[in-house]
Image (spheres, rainbow over the protein chains, first blue to last red):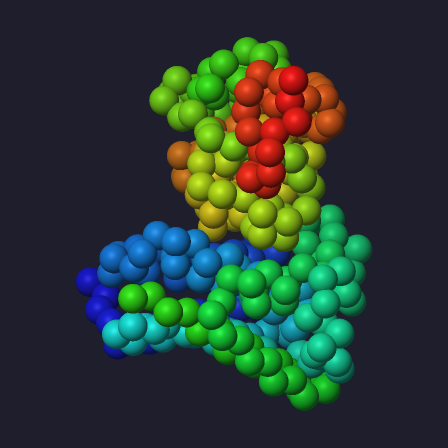
Length: 142
Length: 122
């Protein structure tokens, strides 16, 4: 049984489409187990899934971290990859640098970061070109 | 409207989940090949109509608890995708109709969309 105060780590491999979504669904199950509100779980799961897809689509490797505190929880998506040259541009709906393969998967339409922002209560994005990106999303759950 | 009725309206093939067709009754439907839009704009108890047949469709369904998936224009998902749906108790149907016509049939029969906008149905 997981409890508030827990921290869970999930590694995500770039290009591994077969596993893409596993981390998000494990996060969802963990939150369900500790009785987090269903609406919050839905928002967290969508944001985590988009973050995971971004790592799979754009980065070499990365990880998702779930941190649960008393009244807040955080999902941190951190990767080693190309970075985002212009974060403001990437936050605009429809802006995308994704490949045709991403589009065949039903992603890559420039909705990932906007969806993550919409689902979370707070979001910060730090990115260094050719190094990687760190997205921290906060969710109130009380 | 339960999945049995939906299956009959569309003359859809049951790919998997026969035993759930009577008990699952979606409140809404969404037609899209773009999973980011499905994630962003659907509600609880939504039925997805799509032409996309890869694993990401099943993952998307799992993340937002979709009621089921109808593959349109005769697109048949590979066996491994059907196996993923079985593991998640997610019913799968397939219709020969294209997306627009599938949406039209279900909308006319009373299945609402996810937008919350006033219905224009007559």
